[in-house]
Image (tube, rainbow over all chains, first blue to last red):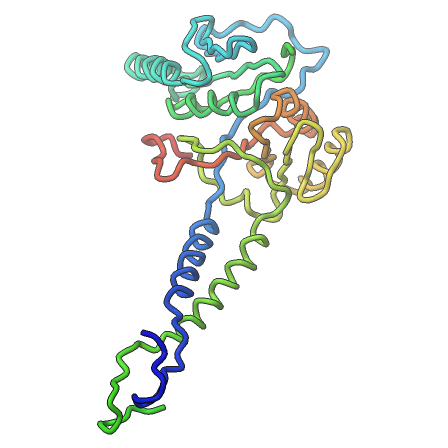
Length: 157
Length: 151
């Protein structure tokens, strides 16, 4: 190292490019990692718009699972059973898993089909953060719920 | 230039990295240019680290309809901003001629947005006879889809 003045056969005119390559490689890798992020989504169903002349006396389905979020406490309820809150969806996941396993074992089918009834409805007040709602949907989906319905009408603020 | 046999008292043992640097610079520039182009529409703070969303290549397609809600006051389709009451017409126009199983509208909403805004968008969407909504979310890296739940 150091410039040799005279003496030896000649000063080396090469620039040391190693740090440059290091930086470039890292940048390259960063961009390569960012680029191919595959998009994914939760599929949700929304009920058709209610028509005025619709038959009002629909029979309530005893198998319906409604997951609701409380706006003050951020607590999650499944058909009125409290199951933790949005910061910890583990309880909801476990409970749904249990229900679906029972249904599979007992052969509880959706009316008129031979699929296990795994429908879930998500109901949340309008002021809840979207992120919290998605967290709940994520837990339900992970437990195997399908289809997932979003309640749109008559939501509280 | 050229290897000197004997004569000079130094032997150059360095690898010539100049072509490698050239190639890498070009690659780097390509990626830098391509990355912003790949991202269509406005940037939204999507829900991250989700365990179970399904991958859907259609989201990236030009023909799919994506409603972006980056904050509580705006709705975007692509890069254009629309007021809530104009949203329906735009969606209707874009959905024309799609087969029933392709009639899905994707919603890209930021995590801090009120659920009520998302519901307002969904309400407009379903007035166009669409009952399938895709809530776009980022999957956690390396998370496997739960057994058999994939569609």
